[in-house]
Image 1: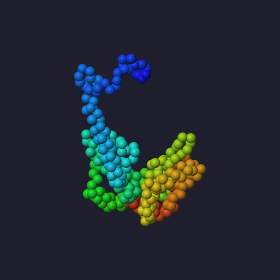
Image 2: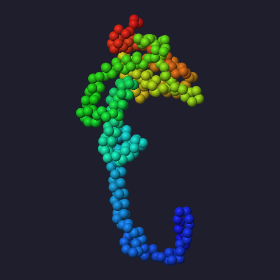
Image 3: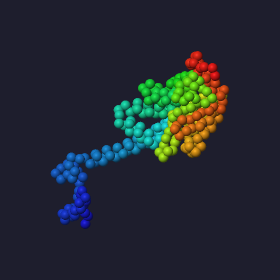
Image 4: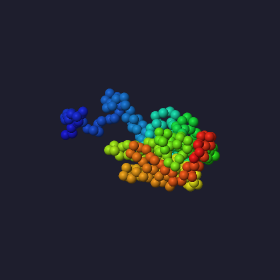
Length: 295
């Protein structure tokens, strides 16, 4: 005999109910003996089937949309970001604007990386660019906007480079006597190059790695060499060195400078191409006329 489980309690059916033939039950919703009053089961099931079919079509369309976004260079396809975008879209009326801005934001980033402009920019310029992507002034990705933006970036490459050198100069800490506050010398000292970790370990700081990338970029441009990609440049190499050696080998060598770092976080940077450092001083002099003393 079949038992019924209701809210965790088990009960045996009565003799009368056990003898009731299943075929005698009618799923009608009207009349005196309706099993489920006031509910049109046939209509309910029809809507259920239609909803499932529409949902299946929506899933197919979403998969197609994600494939198109991937082909456009958007990183919104990542597992954590695409579902989040869909959730935001279905929760607001202006879903089209939400989706368009999110996709355009990732496409602009893709274009900047693939054209090398992100590598050419210094840390401050990249931060300003990223901030603009989350502002109301972010332009829509259209052929006219893309061509105009990259034409302007191309024309301003030289000024972008010089602004990067000046930014490096302005960020030198005058707390160290080695740092001449009016010029790049044979050696400079950068603070906050490292950060402390649990257990006494150290690691390269994000800000310190960014400054090393900017420094390497300046030397490469002055030397007429290809700029390393920002995603695998001097900062990444320094980070890997510190991660591998900690304080057991606190000397890091790059083509244009060497770094001896200390557990307190600072790093002594010695230029191996002092003539290039002097050319950076020429740039400083153009931006701060009369500021540099005799070498």
